[in-house]
Amino acid sequence: MTFSALRSLQLSRRSLFLNCSRSHSTNTFPLTVRSLLDNNVEAGSDVTVKGWVRSVRKQKQISFANINDGTSVRGLQAILSSEQAERLSTGSCVELQGTLVKSPGKEQGKELQVSSMDILGECDSTFPMQKKRHTFEYLRTINHLRARGNAGSASLRVRHAARQGLQDYFAKHEFTQVDTPILTSHDCEGGGEVFKVTPGSAASGNAEFFNKPAFLTVSGQLHAEMFASALSRVYTFGPVFRAEESLTSRHLAEFWMLEAEVAFIDLEQLLDITEGSIKHATRHVLDTCPEEMEFFDKWVAKKDVKGKPALLKRLRNSLDKPFARIDYKEAVQLLQGANKKFEFPTTWGSSLQSEHERYLASEECKDRPVFVKNYPSDQKPFYMLENDGKQKNNTYVDEHGSTVACFDLLLPGIGELVGGSMREDREDVLESKMKAAGMDTEEYGWYLELRKYGSAPHGGYGIGFERFMLWLTGFENVREVVPVPRWVGHCKY
Image 1: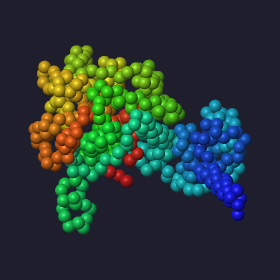
Image 2 (image 1 turned 135 degrees about the horizontal axis):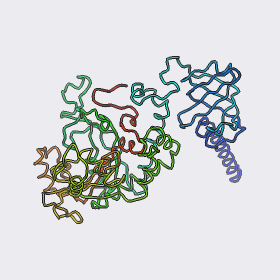
Image 3 (image 1 turned 60 degrees about the vertical axis):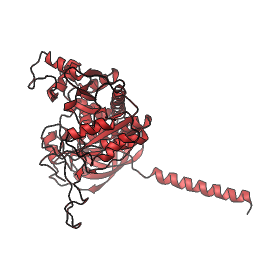
Image 4 (image 1 turned 120 degrees about the horizontal axis):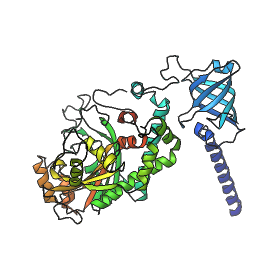
């Protein structure tokens, strides 16, 4: 065989392979309800739709069913014969074949004229999600079915988009995503609210599986610092755990954190990065989830004083202006001078409570996110950089006492969303702070060695992802925005 003939045969086989691959990939997934409603398919097309029945309206001659496959807040209206509808019930899973036609109704542009129907999964008459509004508390009791409703499914889609938005921001700014351990031997924050891990059986023959106590992580920060000392810009995104016996609407035992660590920056640059990541992710959600955001604006979030939807307006306003930035000292002065009575009084050295945080963002800064920075040293953990004038651009020391180069980002209606700081990069100062806190410096020897071997100025922050979801959706309880919530006394599923 000549070279040209061999080459022709190779190209022919390659073309056949590609055509087969394209043919196979085209039929991999059925059309989604979202794609049918978003004008990706023209009216008059014969289509197949698979999904769950949200509601059925049966009449003598003709019946209507709302079909949803979880890809859209809107369902696809299906037109059926009375005989077809007789077999349907709310909650059943179906495959419908028919013709997509223009709808005369105002609520949808297209509907499905059904020609044939196959019930993939029948649904018992006791299905607990009928066509009516259920309270969020009730839906939490049937969490395994919660995503079948609009609020549950829209929350998961927005959660997906918010994650994408954050990861897109870090990718564009040359961050490397790293995976930090879930099992750890230390308590990053030093609060002691950790879950201890023990083996489920005595197979190892030791009381301690690792020959020392091990815990579920409360933060990936210290390990992220490990990688930032080599890669400069890193972030980690994963579950963290707090054994905090709190039943408030802001606390979970298991939640997700995005934590970033950056070398060669100062505090103001760290605030810039924080603000940029929040704005980028918020804009991404608004751009990619318009119908979900309109749903939350109308049905979930609180209205303004005039009773009008306020969520979308608040989010868009947050993108238009820079976030406010004030010192802790200034925050205390503003709270002391406020024409409002607080449950907890504020003085230098006192912690800012939720009522203070909401007042600063919602009222003092007029519904504008605000950074509060340079807190008193004794309020904050050991790893935060002391403001003693030895670090460029971090020279703030109050006459009341020492401060650390840190910040909290407060959001209107939410309170604290982000906490971060410059990290103490001087070995001797860090070691003395650890000893003062009663910590075992041998246990944290590796962390000290990061300062011993080529230390660099660096800082980082953590975003409580469920609190970010409250900001985006208007929900008031973090249990509504986590797929399977865990809190003290509750670990179902």
